[in-house]
Image (cartoon, rainbow, N blue to C red):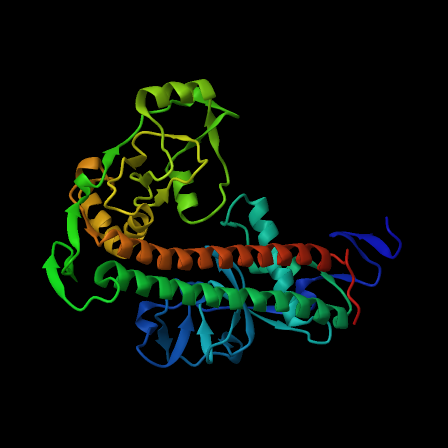
Length: 413
């Protein structure tokens, strides 16, 4: 054991750090459950889980007179303990918190609340990992109160929280940049893919109003639309040619690195390629089952085979279409909404070749297509850079938490 450290019930920690039950330094207050008859259309807002996670912006209200500890105010630390788990700051107006939320108050002479936020964040992550998922069935108020936590000297707590909050602030800035860029992308796609660049005269078409010199054609004639020979699990191997299913294409379409890949023998790949062909640079792949409408434009040096039924394959694309322009149009809300409409109508949504051929594509002149594609590609590239930057800071934060919250790296005050 390193000099200056000691063995504790929660691991090796610096000698001047304490170990306490959370209840000794923090108080967890239960929220209140409500009857439908108690909801109002105005009054004090009631915070529910969806209001904290961002999945719901609508609030219920209450005019009940409650004990003061059942209200929360700007800057209070809350903890979500049902379905969604973890600490969160409340920065809204005075509100009531629902039953599935705890409010936490601190002994400020012993525990810095910002430091406690990061401790709870780390505790939650570890509990999720131990339960092999996001559902933690045994999180109770009593259990959280008895949970042992490390307690550095207060000035060190504050310094640790300052460091981690600086990284969080950077991540928030990047999130804002991503949101702004996504909004820009959405607006540009809506305008460029329907109105084009610099047009003043328009005409009606199957896609609505478009520039007079644009064409609208059926997807039936933009290229050869097919699928591929089905690969059976018996042909899977641990190495060889990557075998991409809908899952992998969806990850690639989102600009993510593949989490997992299965393979087929190179001999089997060569057999299928000779008989049925294999995707080449410039071909477009579209997920057709499960997650429908993820688009991937095959790049140079991509070499893989894929499963029949999960993906559609567009090859030998007409030279009237710039492939990058086509990819952007396929990714647009305009086209995705059309895919959603034709895919519906059965017990399981699916995009078949027959259904796909009912759709339409606008065709500006090739120069305008290339200009539009260049603009939109630059936006996508910016989003990829921002996403990578965010991932880098998230990894930095994860590493800092592992080092700072355990005292492996000490901070000077």
